Length: 101
Image (cartoon, rainbow, N blue to C red; front, side, top):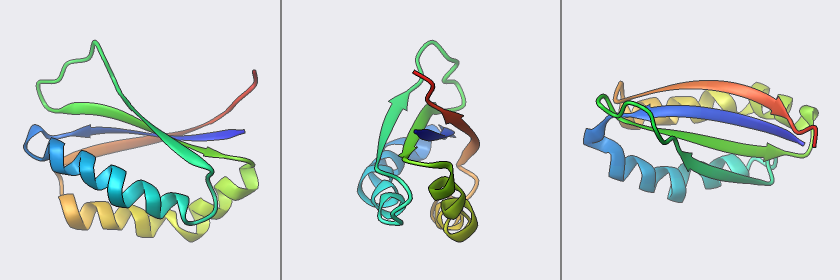
């Protein structure tokens, strides 16, 4: 199992509509690529929220090959949709993990 983790700090001014968009539009679009089975949204606790709220979105993939397919075929389009809608009101970084237990 591969987990594609996207950590996002979201400006307070868009926090509520961004979270709704994430749940209703973005995650379903990512899952519909066929590269991931499901996703979890987590809110980071015990972090400085002065500049915004921090979330981690974890997309679960059955294989590294499916994850690689997402990156090569879909990731740029998905990222651009976010930037087109929310501009510079968020910042994200990504990591890839393998479940070992």
